[in-house]
Length: 423
Image 1 (cartoon, rainbow, N blue to C red):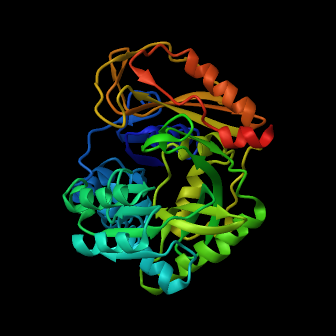
Image 2 (spheres, rainbow, N blue to C red):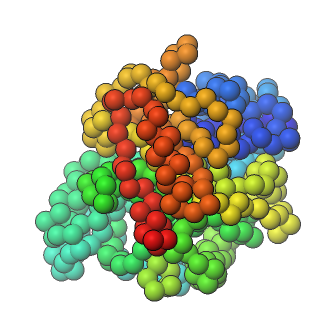
Image 3 (cartoon, rainbow, N blue to C red):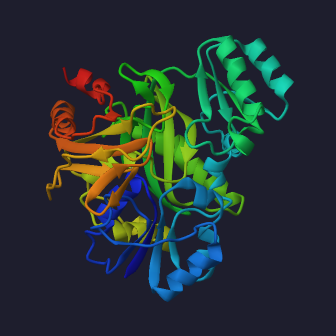
């Protein structure tokens, strides 16, 4: 079958790499792709905001499955017209995608279904939000309600930081996403991510991971889209995973079905684990980036039948097979990220290898003839596996050290929690 993959980041490179391995995939179209995906499929130019145009392209190219990588097209409702045209889609409907598109929507689902999560207040008024923080004190978490490219969340350790974050939201720092604000209780414990594939009724676990959001070593500096990740997440043992499924994911699926918005696609649960008790921090309705990269490295099954089962309602008959190896990815970013950074620098020394245990997934790159240029903030995902966290980490940094890119940087401690556990 012909498959269309939408997106241009490291997540999409990893998905393209995995989809292209499937014997079910005839032609993989990638819109728009990046500097690393040229050899995996046919790059095409596509305005994903033009839903009718996407449907028309799918009909013209006999595309039977559309895999939507990023969240914005899903929240914008791209899946709906595709399904109406009889084209399979990996991703939720517009209404179901509100689990990521609106923090308030998710909190209301949690309230209705008794899902464990942080206590919160919801505000559309600047002064009322500030008064709530004054009353609650710090530490406290400030979240823009809508999509803010991973930058709309502030974990404020002081009252002044919290008030400044509220001011940013209501003063337009995140555009329309900050017109409403959620102020949350600060949760303690260890943060981790668990992924579930869903077909509207059924859910199957699809791996665990831990991300590193802060830009600097030792988890210092501002939050980013993610500076590295590893899988599996040791904090999510079998007992805790079962609790996440029973106490969080199953009630969510029932709640969405009850409101006429059955959820299909990947449900990415950001969790806080405290003494084995999970609480939901937030949902995403697409694979994480860079978590997707480490999941794809460990997935041994053909991914295409699994993606199709999410759309067709056949997940109860599907099992995903995983490598027992550990996978770890280090993000190489442009100097200055997550602030201002320059574009156009040349990257040399990238490994040319078919080694499935050591790979560099591209994110913010473009290929100009045979030259790879950096055109984004997070640019490369240097990914490796090993029998344990310590060896996977060593393998990844060995790859990093072979890349010639003076205009880039990375954290040097990705995976520190897992390595510390092993030592």
